[in-house]
Image: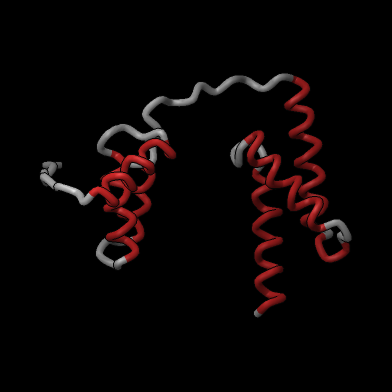
Length: 137
């Protein structure tokens, strides 16, 4: 695919915004500009959802890839226990009295281990969000 070039001079506010985006997301030099363009074009309705998903993922890649460290046996056991607990809470959501506790626990698990290792935590948060939206709607 042939790439197209643009030379753009940014006002200082926009330039600082790009620099902050670059630092916050730990991106290379060009990716924050391309990410901002992708976001803007999608939200303005000029590119498809498919294009948006492809380019936002591509331009969100960190400059320095994080090394994945293997889990310790203790961490693996904790993930198994959390997963079992989250699945039980999801199944019995309406009967659960400490919903906020489990929401915070799921947020902690996602932050600590990530959605790939604890998908049930993400499911629990999604369910909680769905139920909350239903109670307002």
